[in-house]
Length: 223
Image 1 (cartoon, rainbow, N blue to C red):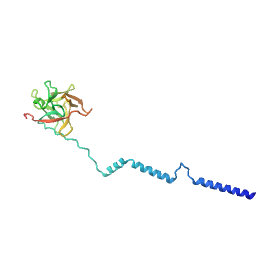
Image 2 (tube, one colour; image 1 turned 30 degrees about the horizontal axis):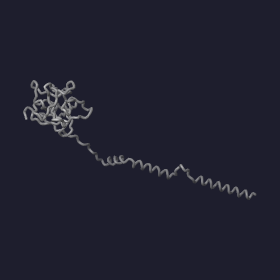
Image 3 (cartoon, rainbow, N blue to C red; image 1 turned 180 degrees about the vertical axis):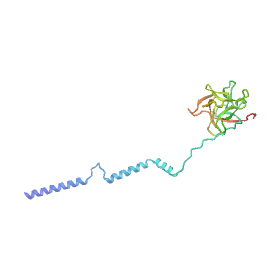
Image 4 (cartoon, rainbow, N blue to C red; image 1 turned 45 degrees about the horizontal axis):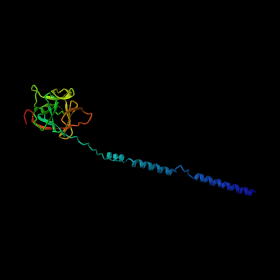
């Protein structure tokens, strides 16, 4: 009996050792081995780099040291202060030119028709080399003096020239080497398809009208 009991105890002990060994060597199903964790981390890191090609491209561009300059703005050819010209709206019926009406408002007149001194203007820089001007009548005179384009009660009008008046300051916004937006006193000058002149506050939206210069001889002389 004692021998049988001893063999039974030995078998049980061996069984426990085998179970314990199995438990110690096995890995829980939801826990990765250390090597597996390292592989996962490396894979995730590589994916994050590959998924950002723009970042890699930016680094390549930066490391090259090359800087791409933005496209240069067009340089408009502006008539000299002694040159008369017509201001003609582009892509409008009958190529309307700005004109001083009998009431001194500035409207339009077909540039293809016989134009006179009321359609001819000249630019006078506010200072040498300045890009802000007075837009004067080239040949039309009142009391021997030219008139200047200005904003009066919200209307584009020919008024007595005053270089200090903000309402008479003229800027030209180049759209090409020959076309431009005309801004008077902070307002864009617009010409409708039918030739009607209106004003829009500059900067609120892009101008809808582009102008071009049509030479009309030297100031003080008829072409």
